[in-house]
Image (tube, rainbow, N blue to C red; front, side, top):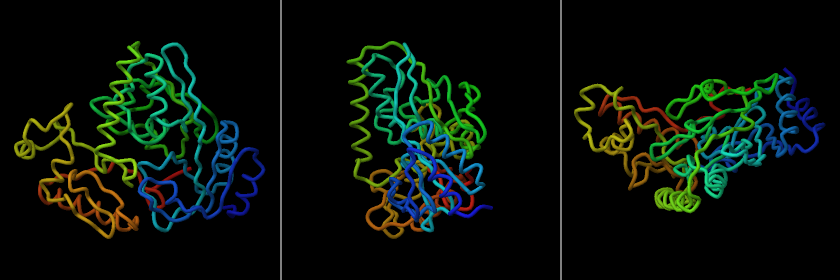
Length: 327
């Protein structure tokens, strides 16, 4: 396998690509944790990003694409390979469709849709991260998910650019085909929306944004909810008998309810803490580390497992750990 210097040389030949060696990934995650990447590569132009992807693929060095790191836990040891980030943020209107580059902020897409009187994204207001990250994790809130409006996704699969229609993306609750193909890179996403009143849409998104800011203040170093909610129909009858029916929303029981009843509120490992007001919210209160965070998540899962016999599944993604996968 070629050395990191050879990979650096190949990347350095590509115009409009910014490269840094030993970049601390803590600076690129909402949790503020993570050691250095061998190489950190950013590009805001599609052509440059594609050339960088091709160079990493051909070098056979380990590589991974990240978004803004809002839902990412990076190992304290960092990542032994190339971390790539596409910051292209163009949003193009095509009648009732919007075509957004993967590096665009999701909030920017929500705002653009509302200003054009296009409905379908307003409930996603305030969700941090990029359009690419939202598609990757099928982001959603208040009973809606981005998969409901995605019509097509353009990606680089290691050898060519191709498109996937909505059904081919295999969307499910906080899931998509992209989570099973970490060697793919999302480039753009097209969303198909419905006509709406711009003022009503703006008002609705502002209300939701205010609620999210109250629960997840922008200065709080967290990833929102740590664990996925649980599908009510998939829960064992004895568990459903314990959870009151009024907590079920859109066919899901909130993970926070099980965490709260497993006494997880206020738990801490080092400076990583579970919020006192929300059992599914973990934040970095100071100098927390990935080691602290992983230990706290493991303890939360253990408590729910012992109390209810359930295995919670994380929404967050891991990088630099054995299971990370990549290019």
